[in-house]
Image 1 (cartoon, rainbow over the protein chains, first blue to last red):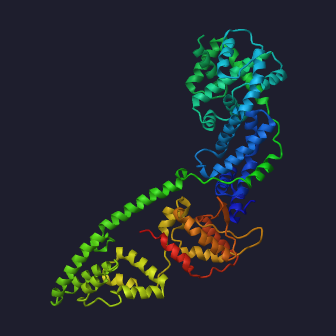
Image 2 (tube, helix red, strand yellow; image 1 turned 180 degrees about the vertical axis):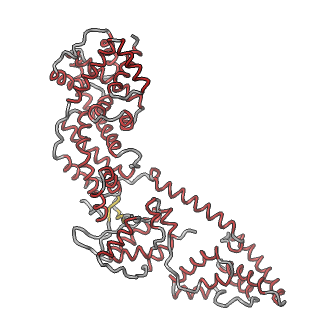
Image 3 (tube, each protein chain N blue to C red; image 1 turned 30 degrees about the vertical axis):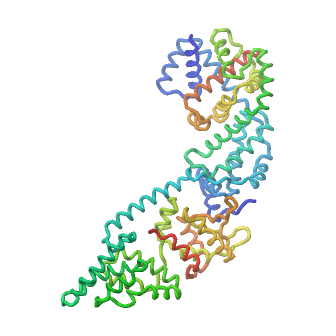
Length: 216
Length: 355
């Protein structure tokens, strides 16, 4: 059951600019105001959904993960120190939850079966070791069919190949390609070094390109 | 091309596509692109890939997610905040260190007879006072004695505060012409007073403690005990132990004022009840909160109550909102009664006095 917000605060929140409004909502929610937290859910759920979906790539799974993300945020909000933006902090939770979801055993098993099929077809990219072979193929100078594919076919193949990428690479791609986040923010959200963001994104892209070519 | 070089090239071009290279790298990449067709081909492919990924839009968010979160929130308990991550705890700790240091310096600079000392040190002073009193008996017989007698009376007054010192104090003070009987009261006198007016007695003790540090002569100290206790201000507590910057604007507010605000709370409507938030000292919140919550409830008011781990939490505020609240009360024509703080709360509030 939600509690009434203080009269003055409600007026203050309504008057504040978007950034100030969010800051007030975060403060109120941190103090236990569920109405304020629900307002934050309304504000951020669509973006969290996009990030989570891009990582788990399944609507039912994404729905569960998004709920978990916000429940986790609600529990942890009293510890939120405001050193990062609230959205970055939320992305941190979202990517972490989505990656954990993918790494659960059953999920792994299901994906391993798919991965084996695609690898036999010539485009497996389920782990970082496989990426090297793909990069080598790229380096061999063979003519690339990648650009020759129609946009529609390229997108269809890319979606299949995305499922084969390691979860951590997908997370980096989701934040960069989906949310246009700066590398520094991605590093913060994923809790990794800036150089790691750079290398993950590069390897993910090259792997995807080669996977799409391999499936052609 | 070596593996390391290929990886490096892919990384640099990928960052270049994202606009995440510095000026030096940009110059290098652009030079390479002019001379290396493979690098150009890879760059083109990365760009195509990026635009393809941009088209990979997730499906629309199912409409029920927000409602599902709302439902699950009502069952989601909050874990207590880790105290070591709470910046207020560290602020309060730092403030406590500063306050202790200041008190230490102040006490160090006080004359020995005005310090609140351990038992051993008090014994030393008692001996000194006894010796002084004996000397005083001799000196008092001489006509030029009064100023010295005043000084000894000051010593006697401070020693009086220690339990069991009354007799010594009386003996020390007896020869003094200016020492009035009520100033040098015995323990029995004090007990009687306490039984009659416990709150006043406590306030007097607090006043005495405070003024002992600043009073220049015995007469002032003695007279300070007589008038009724004025509302005390707990400025230090608000500023430091409260732990937030906003609380500093509560400087000068008294607990009496807090109570007055609570007394003034009246429900304005079922959907928009009056709320008042009070910044409670972190360290004493648990102790004070039940009394304040109970008080607000007893008044039928709309004090904001939130739940934190199943406990009621009366939220804090003051700052600009405090004056805003006062203005709003005025606008609504709410008379702020001059209500003394409840006995129980006054007792509890005494805990807030810093040593």
